[in-house]
Image (tube, helix red, strand yellow):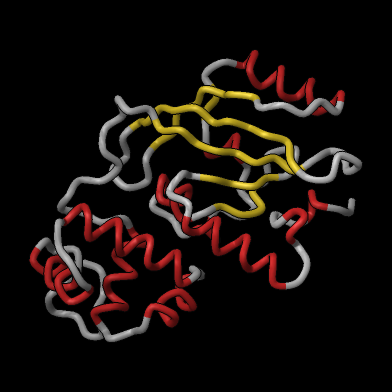
Length: 214
């Protein structure tokens, strides 16, 4: 298969536009994934990966049906039939999943949108997640996901944002997304305050060097 279905950047796959597309995807707060027609994740942004306490690269190759449980089979059947016939529209699918940070069951809606060159069949799928407002908070204020804990440990050891990203398979914007999310949750400002708070809350081990998650 060739065309946009092979590259999550779609029409921006060539040259510097691909990097601009990926940077923009990282900065969008809405959970987003680009998938093949059968559901295999090509790329996910930090907001999507955060639903499982994971790094975006850890979702690559996973299937949406393994990550989300559809609540109505008829919605999936309608999407499958539309893809078979080459129709292009937005298809909502109500889903539930287990939060990777605290194990709670969350609910929301995936909006599936076939994207890319109309001549390429089957198309790639753009999946946007709307989390139900009635769902519990994804992470208690005093805890951190495994990815967040690893970011904090590297930051405590003096690693730069770029080196943290390289170590964990994140972009610079992806690292900043997690740090900003933590700062808002813990109501602190700055990396030094975040690291100090992590030790106080027991997220980082007090007797380890190099710094390590507790």
